[in-house]
Image (cartoon, rainbow, N blue to C red):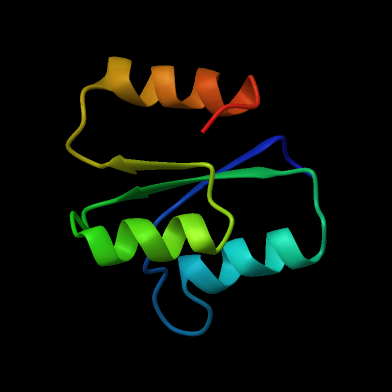
Length: 78
C-alpha cells in the first residue's frame, strides 16, 4: 500500500493508467495518484482527475516541478 503512485495514462496492454487510478479510488486504497505522462491534452487531464488522480505532470516537466507536485500531493493537496 504505497503512499504515492506515479504512473502514465497509458500503461500498455491490459489496464491503462486511468483504469488503475479508478481501481485505487474504488477500492478506497490510501494511495495518492499522480499521472506522469506525455499526453498534454485537456481531455486526459479531466479524465485523470475524474478517475481520482491528485496530480498530472508532464514527463518533460522540470525535476523541481515533479518534486513540488509529489510534495503537494503527499501533503493532501492536488
